[in-house]
Amino acid sequence: MSVTLALAPFFPRPATKLSPGAARRTLGAVAIVALVVPYVFLNLLALEPFVRYAAGLVLAHAALGILVWAGLPRVPARGRALSLRCRSILRAGFTTVTVVLGAVLVAMLLAVLLHRGRPIDWIWVGLYAPASALAQELYFRGWLLAALDELWPDAPDMAVALQAGLFALWHVRAFLEAAGVMAMLFVAGTFVAGLMWGLLVRRQGSLASSIVTHTLALAGWDALLLLQGQPIH
Image 1 (spheres, one colour):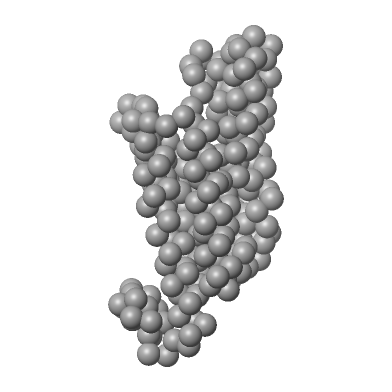
Image 2: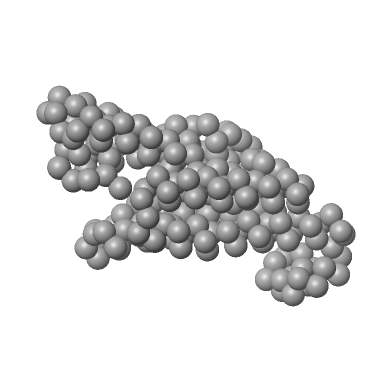
């Protein structure tokens, strides 16, 4: 309870009125948000991609364990108080995602037809994309968004924006692999993608669509790298 009292000024609920169950939910939510620190740090290390993705899955399951212990919902509430602005963003996002996924499929087809990349490279694409997407969606759009809903129950739009910001923070590794401007554009793009996926999960009450589209997006990105003769990572 002392930890809850110390954290109370940062959250909207007065500590003096927290029941034991509410205190547990608050502590669990804070712990899930705090897991973003090791998650970002692991992504910055010079580790093999599959090691990073496996570590991401471990952290996602650790967050799930905390979620269950705290008694929090495993998926953010469906359709929870989406503002008219967010609905407009979501409609625009669906159109954008459709166009992007079309380009992704064309890129993958070209890479195959032009015989770019070794067969083993395509095997890695088939492993990396779903492993990375699953870990990120479980943590960011699943458990993290549910935790942010607990901490800010009256600000669902802000919770979506916060998880998108933390999702973009996870991608600061881009500054180690690309020029400054390109890295900034990439990180900004991940914020927009995180916002779209967050709104999608909010609308559907399920992670299925975000996991599938995220997997396709990562596979398309790797296909573009192979088209350019670059290693996937």
